[in-house]
Length: 151
Image 1 (tube, rainbow, N blue to C red):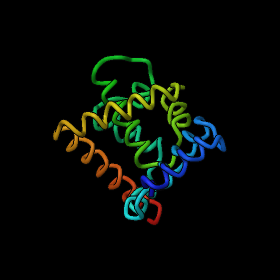
Image 2 (cartoon, one colour):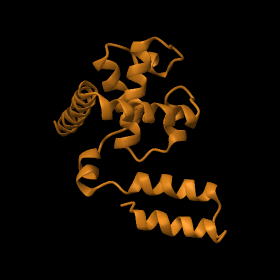
Image 3 (cartoon, one colour):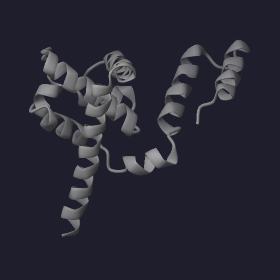
Image 4 (cartoon, one colour):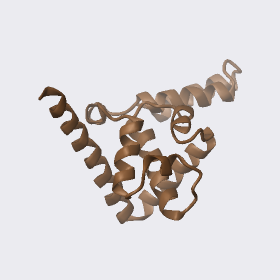
């Protein structure tokens, strides 16, 4: 888990010029990806970018091609941003990999989408409910896929 103490320790490394600010940012990104609680990690098994795109597309009555496209209609943009947010939160994928999966988008676009959804989650209960419903569908979809493979 990332703590204030760890961040302070890394900041000291920057101050002492042992690591650069760019290296610091990379370390934080890696730690953020691997610092999830074990409960969250257990529930994230089976989450893939492709599965997330498929479930979000279905939820919004879109195709995965639309979510990957450059379409800027509000419905497509919202679905794409939510899918990107879920990919970042529930997978170990880096910004660059998520960007590639969403039509070759730059990592800065992915960061913007994640921040945008996080801001909405902080302000809007409907967005919280929407994201939770989609995450549940993804989890249920994974359980159904596992059952199908056993049959």
